[in-house]
Amino acid sequence: MTRRTARLTAALGALLLLTACTGAEDEAAAPPSKHPVFDENLKSQVSLALRQTQRAGNASFTHTLTFESKRGRAVQTISGRVDFAGGTGEATIRWQVPESYPSDVKDLLLGRAPGLGPADSASHAFVDSRQITYRAASSRYWLRYGKGDYDPALGDGALIRLWGTESPVGGTLMEALSGTRAVSVREGNAGRTYQAETPPIVSSILPFSLAGELNDEAGAAFNPVQPPKPLPTTVTVDSRGMITHARADLSHLLGKEGSVLDDVTALRMELKLSGIGTSRPAAKAEGTILPASDTVRSIWTVKPGRCVDFSTGQHNATLVAEIPCSRTHDGRLLAQVPYGDGPYPGDTATKNQARTACRSAYHRASEEWTGEAAEEGTYWYMWSDREDWQDGGKAVCYVVTPKGAAQDPATAGTL
Image (tube, rainbow, N blue to C red):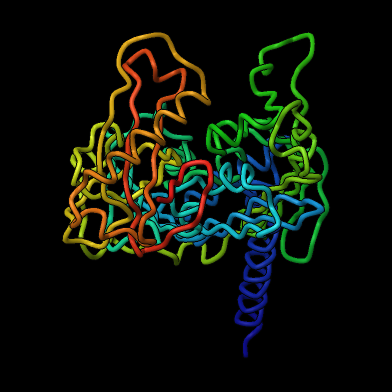
């Protein structure tokens, strides 16, 4: 090697070394990527985690509402899958209510099918932005409700709550997380756990009747003097910034004077998310689908001889699905008996008139109709209350079929 070649080789080596060092320095100087949740203001991190979860496209979920009482534990479970991007979801709703619970609490939680006892404890639904396709566990068909087919004044809101704002399937804690503010955070191996506060907006999550039994302070949300007390909430977020678990304590909303929940000592909600990004829901309901607009109506408008089911999803005993008598059904109407004009005579007198009128209607009815009774010689009846009296008092008489019958001395008559 000549001296000139050696010098050139050394110069090239120095240049390569310099280039390598410069590249390393540039790489070290590059700022680290910003985490979409953890690098933002602490108070907003739960809300941002909800947005991050929604951007993943879809998820599986399980939501529980738990009532603790000395009589036992009642639990509602809503589980299913949602497609945030497509605005669709499917859900199964189940109630587990101890037999020891008083009848008024069972009626509040489950609703009531007159003559059959508590309403179905399980149901299924497909939800999108335009309609809810609903089926009670005891039904062999689906009811399809469009938003124009549902009148909240006719039910307790259990069905309408399935239309969500933060998720295609509503009625879960997910509806409240956008307003949840983190107070503190604990680092974990795979994410973070937040202690947080959620506005007490249970009226946008729970059915109207159930929310009405709580000290729902949402109405005081705009009171600057005494703002509502938030719900203590714990939220777990994974390393990607997506929510996997949330739990809120609603116990301080109990204790409303005169509430049928006076025996309940604790109340909480819990949400679990999994399969985020890989849990697309089923496309549609399979089987017979009946439009609610043509099927669901007030029992006061059903003609004698027609057949009905009581499982409409609306927790209103006077709302029924009128179906062909060739289908399995809950009951057959015997008569609609008007009371006539005059002032409201009072609850006891109205009930007694209904019993007398329906006894006569049973004797006059076709044997084909009365022969369907689950228990021979037994008929059932409803009567107008004070609120309904302005439209004209009436008694409705019917028999329940062998699908199931529970003795209820208040509304059953036996010959």
